[in-house]
Length: 321
Image (cartoon, rainbow, N blue to C red; front, top):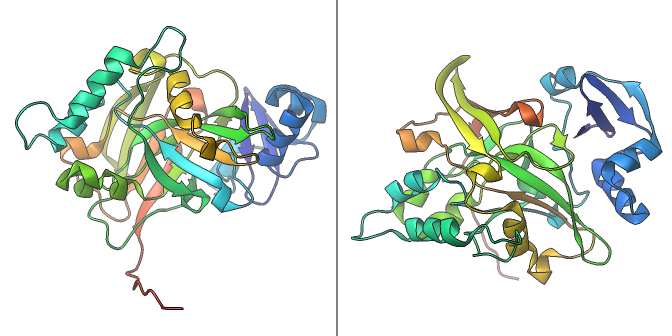
């Protein structure tokens, strides 16, 4: 089952090729809150609410009418976060950025820690992963909207990955709503200067697929990351995800995020990205304004597409009160 959110208000449920509006709900956030309050799964809540008018998800996506599949009504209560060095192919690209000093880089050390302790027998409480903050809901970009690079950025590059959406219940329990593809858009040139600039490089928008996969994450995910320029593919590479291709379990990544009470505040929405192993920057590719990023993993519904743009330079002025 897939769930989508209309920018104009309304929730869509799609099963196979049949998509309908969910009766009585204007947002996936409200639907998920109602499911938690009722003690129901999201699928059961949709069945209880019922569905109405049929819709064409592909046409709505093409017309830019679909939002992120879940969005908090108050952007300040929507956290965008992620983990890195979690995939079995993710270390080489990062390590190539940070090998100026002799011996093993900190990135490779972190990766090896994940290989050795990221998949504990009980699925959680293994070695903690790298963690980063992307921003709040202001930085959450829908399919079809521009990924806007800051005027001061040295680079704007894609990072195709999967993301989990979580809603915190009234008792502080995190509830996983579902999964989407994501573009975790970063500034790799800034990151390469020094790995301590990683935090700066991540403070960027991130884009999320129009359709939310409800249910378990497939153990093996195959997708493709593409960059189009003037309508033509100028870079393309397959990517793998899912736990079969990761050095951490999803449960372990979830534990090390939600172990902080700060992230278990009732009503908050969390979008957590699980890392990637593929990026064009590692191949020496340079993106330019107007390029279109495409992240396509058929198991997660409609491909995610976003155009790269750049904001106008803005003055930073701090005033004394």
